[in-house]
Length: 425
Image (spheres, rainbow, N blue to C red):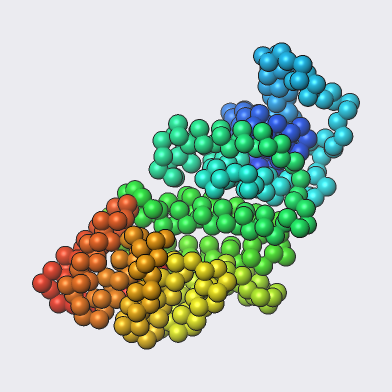
């Protein structure tokens, strides 16, 4: 035993998915293994600060979790008292896979665990909840707070996800070669959804949830480490870093929203920007760029502009055109309209917005109204701009965004026009 050199939780968090992956690989029983790992983590958190960190923390956790898993399975077996449960119990001498505390053949069980959490049998909300719990190591209460739902609701969601995994009898293995591209895409999509919710919270009193965005970045780093040759995994990590770099300047005193054009760029995280640009520069030459790489390239153009006025809007508009061809979606079209407006004038952007008016996927979204408001304000139509700001404020559930939009509307009530960039960043 040695004295702890780092915070216990700092040590436990990256070990948690490795231990869970090792147990699921060795014993199966995903839901019960998850409970056993949680108990082992609790034991470590209480014992290590007083007794010291074991020489091999991972092996210690696996041993404790394995014993607890055995106890839980035996209890389950005794409770059910059914022949099928007894038949499912495999004696230790019949195990056909390596011991849990031996290194897995592929090097790390974390990626397989991620694939399991993001399996297509689970709905997206279940994938997110299970990923944050099992791979991220967040508690049910932490996940519930991040997604603004009661803890009981999130607990039910996680339990439902684990039951679905159990009942589906998913094998704990890497997907087959022909399945892997789609499964990697699902993993990246879930991580991006987690990051997006952290960076731009859709509801609540805060503009962002920094701890959620940070967790998504941490998980994206793991995926990039485990899939070093995947250009889109690198692109996603770059996109997260280049976007999150602006977070320190996104709010002013009191947590009010500061639009991109008005942000103090000296507050941006220069380390994240440098790392994101380096990742992107290494990934782009590998072949045709995917959606995450294209979005990262757009984020890099914003980050590398010395001032808002020096932003290369024509190139950003062109990249959004590429993105819409790769991954057509109304939000990309909305951002394309913004870029076109900044490059060619508000009239060109407003014309593109008209094409989105009948798209039911975004017609009622507050961002469409907010962008229209800004472009109308740029064009000098203050009355229409004010109405659009108010329409946007009615539709967002984010309190900082509501305050910002109401303030913009109030400023246009009988006052001079003050053109500015859209609120989004």
